[in-house]
Image (tube, rainbow, N blue to C red; front, side, top):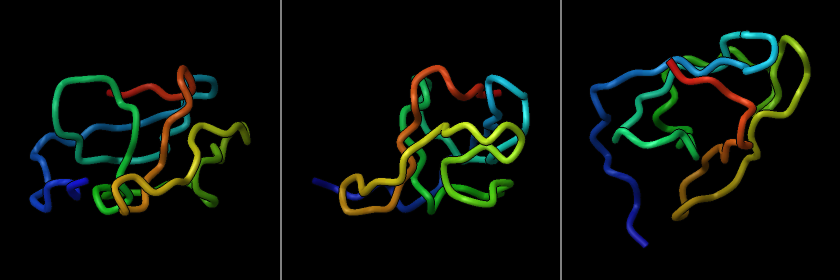
Length: 83
């Protein structure tokens, strides 16, 4: 499998918790589809203490995994809001 494109997309989105509305990440997202995974190399701001856990309510919003050999966060459906 191919690695993700090394040039960062121009569109930046804010990812927040769907329950407590705490801001979690700023992410450089490519494409117009739903947010399923976040490659860690594209995260520009990280407001979490431990990866995948919301600092406000303590709920798990993502799991750490390797996708195409690159570290990423795989989002749990319905746990995050993208703006």
